[in-house]
Image: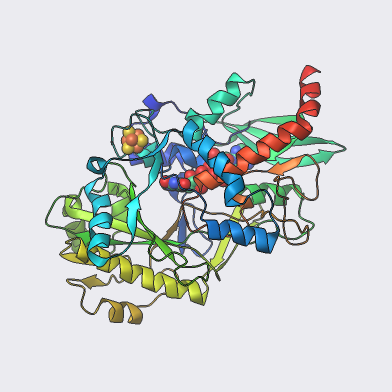
Length: 474
Ligand SMILES: Cc1cc2nc3c(=O)[nH]c(=O)nc-3n(C[C@H](O)[C@H](O)[C@H](O)COP(=O)(O)OP(=O)(O)OC[C@H]3O[C@@H](n4cnc5c(N)ncnc54)[C@H](O)[C@@H]3O)c2cc1C
Ligand code: SF4
């Protein structure tokens, strides 16, 4: 296994944003779309984004799996097929819901606000063991409580004979007869510059670099793109937030980051779109970047930090268009333009967040517009938001769930990989990560990605096991 980022143990996670963004995040947390309109957060370390994610572990919505079957002829992934796969993973990762007393004040905004408004909300499941509710999930868990991939699948793979090369960037893949040669660079840990060249030959190569990096690797290699679909169909699960000021202390940097969600508005109209509401951990540096305003105004907002609560709405895209291409240096370029129906949902989502915060007792709520909209009560919210400007760079937008850039399907002209994640074009070349989802999901993706990976790994072992064992003996 080649991993561009470093390998870190729990004692190296010091719970500060400075260390975490530097060591654990793609582009130190500054990765964004080409117009800088959307910040795209991803992990870059052994364990990938699972090392820095917020532990929400949810099954794929059934209506999404049905779309994959109907429109992309994906097989073996109906809710009935996946039920035992999800069950196995949930057992392995100790996926469970938290008891009522464990929800942080920031998560209770969702529970209490939704209850007051009559919206459906419930606790989400999490993949942790003996979590002490430190709130540092996004900075690497210092207590080894998170069952992220670096603390579960990877150590087990190593026990079974896998070898992990950290600080090793795959540059290109070359298909030489039935063998694939991966050209790579061993990096200097601190400077991230190449130190040594390396090459690895294998009959089977699995690309798992995420929905941003996997298409970039394939495009650099000129492989698996007879469909022209590599890099296309990017969905971001576009995310915005509001910030509420409360009399009580919320301290949104502490406690479990995400343990409650509101799904009242996902696929409400049966069009496959809509939005989902969750809590968001607000660390001080992140808050300073995200809170609108400058000078005194910004200082005042930061001074009330312990009283700030924040919730996010994540849009399940239906008509936005995103793409990953590569620049002259072979690095990924992310472009994204929002569709009109998704924009409508974004407006409704922002209004819903504002109402939720007032229903939970906020005395002031503001949006993340460049010229923020500030409300001191729920009156007039919908009208004011309707009149607000919604162009890119006028509202802070984020993504932590890029998906779909090497999508799965039966038709080699419309998709990059088949239902086992093998590329249509190159036998023995697989893509297994978030890039293979045929559409956006509408929920946090880690369990879907793990389920796809389990299915594909089982098929791969059955069909290529003999070849790879023979090579290992040589
Ligand atoms: C801050 C944050 C919070 C999140 N919270 C949640 C959550 O609570 N629940 C949830 O379900 N999802 C969450 N997610 C999303 C989830 O973690 C990701 O969707 C998932 O981990 C993606 O898996 P992946 O295999 O596609 O890519 P990744 O997990 O991103 O792994 C890709 C890995 O490949 C490496 N790589 C890339 N290119 C190369 C190369 N050329 N050579 C070598 N290595 C390379 C990268 O460094 C990275 O480590 C969150 C994500 C973030 C960033
Ligand atoms: S809340 Fe704290 S202890 Fe629990 S998984 Fe996250 S970082 Fe680890």
